[in-house]
Image 1: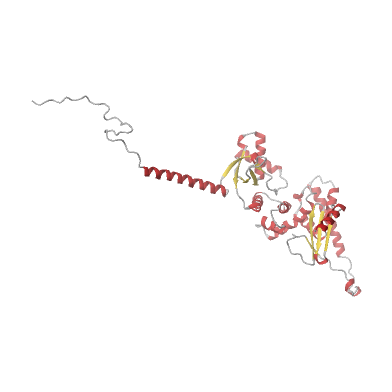
Image 2: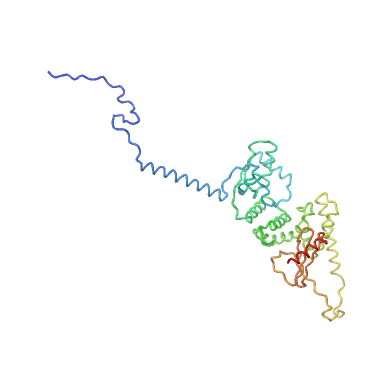
Length: 371
C-alpha cells in the first residue's frame, strides 16, 4: 500500500507583490542598472546643463537676455544724456501706457560692478522709460513698478555706449540739431573721441552728409551759447545755421550775442527766439551794407605792394585735427568766455571774450615761460 504524502496548507502570499530585493517567483534579487549606464546618464545630464549654461551666458553677453533690475540700482548719469528737456505731455502718455500695459520694451544698461553708492548698472538707453517707471513707483508704491526690464549689454568701449544711446533716441525721439550737436561736444570733452569731426562721424554715421554738416554747424552754437541759452532746443534750423555762419565769420559777434542774452529777460522760448532773430538780422544788415559800399577804382589804388591791404582770410570753425590752410582762420570756443582765433598765414592768435582779463594774461605769460 502506497504511503500517503501530507499536503501543507496554501500560502496566501505566494502570488503577492515581491519585496524590493526579490522577484515574485522567489528568484534571485533584482539586478541594478550596470555601472557604465549610470556613468553615461550622469555625463549626459552634466553635458546638457553645461550646454544650457553656455547658451544663457552667450545670450547675456550679447544683450539678448531680459533681466529685472531694481530701479535704485541703475545710474542714469552713467553717460552724458542727449536729451536736454522732456515734454511733460509725452511723459504723461508714457506713464499711462506703462500703468495700463506694463513695460513692453526693455531699456539697455551696462554692468558697473561694485560702486560706493550701490549702483550696479549704468544706463545706456531708455532714460524716458526709467524716469516713467520711477514716477509710477513713487506714486503707487506698487512692487510691480519697483523693477524694470533691461538688457545688460557689453558695448565696445565708451564710443559704442554713446552710439547706442544716440541711435536709440534717433529712432524713438525726434532730437533737435542742438541736442545732437551738444552730445557730440560733451562726448569730446569727456575724452570719448579724439576730435570733434570723428565724434560727428561716429555718433551720426547713419545720417546723410548734409545732416551731419548741419549738426556740425550747431556745434558752433553749443560752444558759444550753451551756458546762456534757456530754450536751446527751440532754435529753428534756419536761425541756428545763420548764427553759426555769423560766429564763424565774425568771432566777436558771439560775445555780442552772449551779452545781449544776459541783459534781456527771456521768460519763454518765443522771447529768446526773438532776441536771437533780431541780433542776427542786425548783423546781416550791417554786413550787407558793408558789402555794398563803393569800391575804389583800380586806377586810384596804390601800385606799391607794401601799401596794398592783406586779403582777409577766409574764416571757418572746425576741429583742430583738420588741416588748416594758410588763407584760413580758425575760430573755436576755447573755454567759457574765451574764444580763440588762429590765422596761420599771418602767424596770429587772438583771444576774445568776457573771460579775457589780466588774470588770464598772467596765466598765459606763466605758461609761455614754462613751455
